[in-house]
Length: 365
Ligand SMILES: NC(=O)c1ccc[n+]([C@@H]2O[C@H](COP(=O)([O-])OP(=O)(O)OC[C@H]3O[C@@H](n4cnc5c(N)ncnc54)[C@H](OP(=O)(O)O)[C@@H]3O)[C@@H](O)[C@H]2O)c1
Ligand SMILES: [Zn+2]
Image 1 (cartoon, helix red, strand yellow):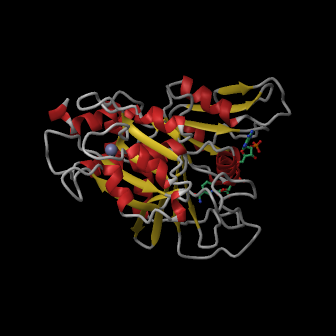
Image 2 (cartoon, helix red, strand yellow):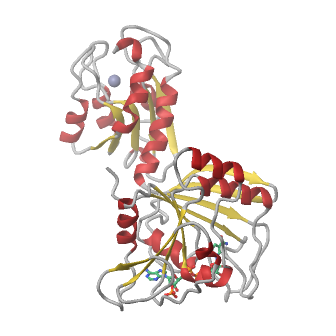
């Protein structure tokens, strides 16, 4: 189904946003507990990628270090450590680099460029930079479902500006580099996550004296995150045999939650979307451009009340609806999705979470 792997960018920066200092020595930004966390993330990846300059400058091994994690991978039928991947336009890589010492490696380079290791030529022009979308498609074809990108500046910039990143793990170290000759986290560029379209912060974790910030970047990841939360919310519904258990969350265009609700939360018959919207002022300007995440398709017909959730959503001015499961014809014929789409609301179904919704409503299906 996916045409590219899930792409996770991982890096550590100083308080002033540098990846390194300008000296020849490798700058230590993190601590042992955080390296162990990175090791765990690596163990969950199918491939790890860095730019050629990082190989030349830092000479990283890019391996899973923990013996337990390696063993667990082997037990699951995977290689003990992920495939290592790099891109180069020059081919200027030392075959004695730690990158080539163990495991499997792939080097993406323009056609005609020679480099050590297994070289995958991309395109037919030596003067063209490697197209990262092509690299991702090729990795997907090789069975890579999760790619971890560990820098440096040009790799992060390229994935972010191309909108080809799903998740960002950013560690902030408690000191300044203070030298504009040092490499920053990213170069200048046009990033899809600007002041208007923001990333979704899903975790802040203190790890000793550094802090991990975890962001979701792609729309599909953000949708799954909120929809999972809506399904979890639906587990709070007071039990009944005459209606489904549903959770709904309203999120504004900046990714901030406005309200949440679940079935029968406020009275005996209220629907999740209705209960979430009841907590908001209908004149709230943040509703324009907002998304409602509902575990079940909003109702288009309804026996218990005069207004359907579809009508309430349209009246609120919400422009996007995301749900996991079409309303099963147990009580009424739904058609909420069709009515919403006909009214120019963007409707997204995430069938991948449908089973979780069926699970919650098992007694009715
Ligand atoms: N703090 C951290 O978490 C962290 C992690 C990693 C790296 N770093 C730091 O980041 C710095 C390196 O950053 P950087 O931006 O200079 O280098 P980089 O991103 O590691 O590598 C850039 C190189 O990758 C190749 N490349 C990138 N995109 C390409 C494309 N589309 N087509 C073909 N080749 C492509 C080119 O190699 P060729 O020159 O061979 O053509 C390019 O010069 C180092 O100081 C390193 O210590 C820090
Ligand atoms: Zn409803």
